[in-house]
Length: 356
Figure 1 (spheres, rainbow, N blue to C red):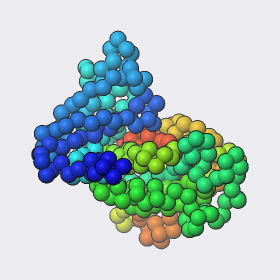
Figure 2 (figure 1 turned 90 degrees about the horizontal axis):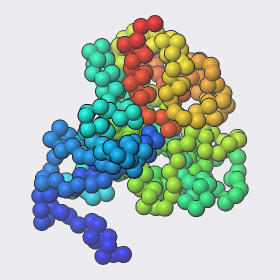
Figure 3 (figure 1 turned 180 degrees about the vertical axis):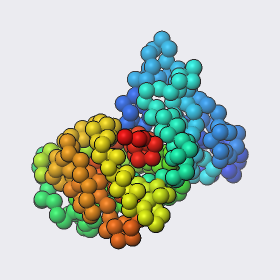
Figure 4 (figure 1 turned 45 degrees about the vertical axis):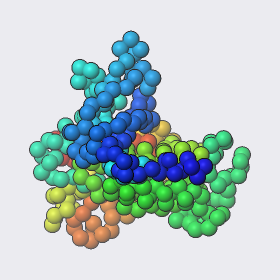
């Protein structure tokens, strides 16, 4: 094993200028991440300088077998925390050979919204709280839970410390540092209310980069759990009953909201979100109805509400924002399995472009 580790950790720069680029894309389910690697002649920092590539879309449920070629367009570059050196991770989106975005390519439409002059002028900032659950590989039961049984009730686990309260911290800390190394603006981590469940936060991120960073952070976490033999779940309600679900609370502000008098802009934006509640819910993740029940720090899926410091509302405005008269708000509706390209661009579209 030591020889294998030595080979894995070889410093390529000692003998060659060549680098390895791991091309990453979203598969046919809209949640499955795929990747493959290629050798490049030297370091690259600009995605527009990277070559397009292709893959077999019939093996990812994205194309028929008789016309299976799908084209990858490189969109964002991150440092590779696994291979290190000048090696890179490349976030891509997928197109037909004719240049049409695949139905699962949500980045393309998001990029159009974020390039709208009104949106560009408002510089939308996002902070996304990505919750997830770690599962035992053989049983698909949460990490730290007795097989076929249940731990003690919720209470001691949120931000808990100790072998009987915190499960999987080595994975979480490895992920935290790997994201920082990669260049992701990860801003924190914490243990969640349900044992075996954790959260990482990414942001503030501007525009389309919020989606790129969440997807690459998810990819890095998938790779780390692969190494440790643990299954990663983004199910919004992995365990039925009196256990918290998993969300992706999305904090949001525009330049107008961050300026003096921004609280009035925030209230108008929340009003617009309420008018499009059903459309947003439909795009905020599959299985969210199992999570948004009005219990366990959620609002009922069929009812739009907002409040100051209210974690049982659809939209929460923080005390600091209320006091300052400017700042941001939190959309608590997105599920943990949401597509960040969809959620971030839809919030921008509704609050900045859309006219009721």
